[in-house]
Structure formats: structure tokens, C-alpha cells
Image 1 (cartoon, helix red, strand yellow):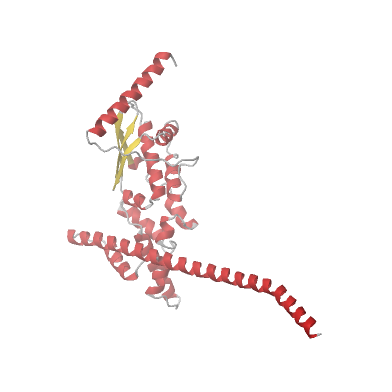
Image 2 (spheres, rainbow, N blue to C red; image 1 turned 60 degrees about the vertical axis):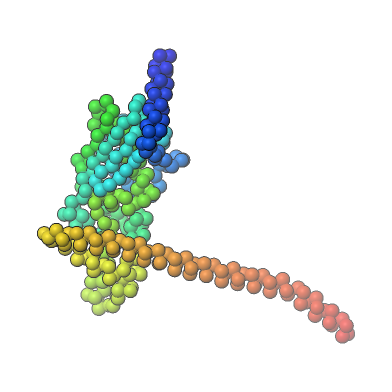
Length: 315
């Protein structure tokens, strides 16, 4: 690279920094999206699954590494995620606007996933934490019928002059999504336009039906503890899942699902708190036992010496 090229790059960086400062001073919001430090960009199932899925798209091999570099360099700003839409601004030779449209999961596809996952999802905490069995894992990552969008489901635009199908600015935003899913898996389901608690509802009903068919009894409280969701709210979720052509019913369906989601979160917190208390109690009891044994062992030599002194006086 010539001296002139280095000078051009330096001038571009200076111009971008000046433009950024000018727009911030004008009151525009510019919030950098911080990538994690360290070698690994993502750690959890949902973040890793998203990034691996991106890397299966043919033709993106040369662009994805540049996108990771841009993200790690702190060039992604104002990342915003809504149902089916992601927007951000990325610093390059200028400040570029990136827009990524992701088609929501169709009702048919989501229904198929719920059906194939019946009885296999342990709880909402397990689902969001990526603690899934092999059967559910295969359903989720299925390239044709899974939760991750196919290449045809993603449409991305960037205001940069690059005419490639995927520029480095768009790649940086796609990787930023993986980091965001790592931090909050619920955002992934919101982006795809589905409610994760519906998977729990399907699994809970499947287990209850299996118990009844086998002659066993599994009450609502047992199912609540098992799946981390209030079974009274589960009935509202099931009603919401039934198709209806009435607009009022659709609105009620969304409200019921939202209420069930909140109830599931509250129940999950309660279960986690009870588990923590039990664990702490066990640990305290174990520590107390060890302390008592240690004290008793130390007391034995003193008792022996006292006994000997008593024998000596008596003799």
C-alpha cells in the first residue's frame, strides 16, 4: 500500500469520526454494540447455533470474517430488533445504514415444530438456556424445517456502494445478532414472531395425556413444577393457539400468550429460588457437621490429659 493510500485511509477515518461527533452533538443517538472480549464471540446454544447457521450459506465465506472484525472493532451502532426486522448503523468509509428483514416463521412451520417437540422440552429455563435433548435439538437446527431462517428468508440492505449480495457491514450486523441471542435468547423468538412458552404448553399437555393414558395421575401442580409454567395460564395458551377468523379473538390470543409468558417467568424464578434455598441449607448442614466433628476430635486429647491427671492425684 502506498503512502498516499495510507493517507487516504487516515483521512477517511478522521472524516467519519468528525461526522459521528457532529451528529451526536446534534442529538442523534449513537450507542455502540459491544462485542465480548476474548477468542469466542458467542458461548451459548442460541448464539452459536445462529452463527453456525449463517456459515452454512454458500457464497458468504469471504464476507463473514470481515463482518466479525468490524463487530469486534466496535463499528456497529444502534442495533434494534423487532419482529422480522433488524436495523443498525455501521462505521466504514462513512456511516452506513443496514437493514435486515427476516421473514417470521409461518404458522404451519411453527405448528410442525411444536408437534415434533411435544413432550421433549423440559422447562422454559431449559429452552432458553439451550438445554435440549437430541430430539429437540434436531428439530430446532433442521436446515429445512427448523427455527433458524433459510437464506431465502433473509433480505438485507446497506447504504454502502458495495454491490455484493452480502457486504461486510451487513455481516457485522448478522454476527451482532448472534451475540444478542447469546445474552437474551427471547429476542430470537421475538424476531421469528413466535412465543417459546407455546413449546412448553405442547410438552406439558403431551405429558399429562400420556400419564392419563397410562393410568397414572399427574396433577396441575405437578405439571407446573415440571415445566415451570402455571397450568391455569396454560389453558389460555391452548385456547390462543386454536385458529380463528375473528379479529377480536386474535387480539385476545396475543394477550393470553403474553400473560402466560409472564406467568411462566414468575414460576421459573420461584422454582429457582426454592432450589437455591435447599442447596444453601444442605451446604450449611454439611459445614456444621464438619465443624462438630472437628471440635470433637480436638477435645479428645484434652480429655485424655485430664483423666491422667485425675489418676495421678488419686493414686
